[in-house]
Amino acid sequence: MAKHILAIDQGTTGTTVMVLDEQIRVVGRVTREFPQIYPKPGWVEHDPEAIWESVTTAVQRNSSMPHARPWARRWASWRALTPPTPWAT
Image (cartoon, helix red, strand yellow):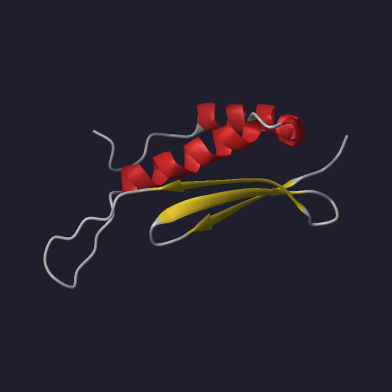
């Protein structure tokens, strides 16, 4: 079974999830943006739930690609066991 690395790059305006093979070649890449909140001039804020949603969506989209099948089941299991976020109501 091929081994893959799942890399998450959390940026200011979005999340990029890449899957790398054993030779560190990018075999999958998905980017999801999230909204910027400008409460007043010169300030920017982010909704943590929107950031988390961008991560989970990007990982799930990568998991549907053929290269990702070996880790897709592990992601689904991990996601099911993840406790609620502290900001969840």
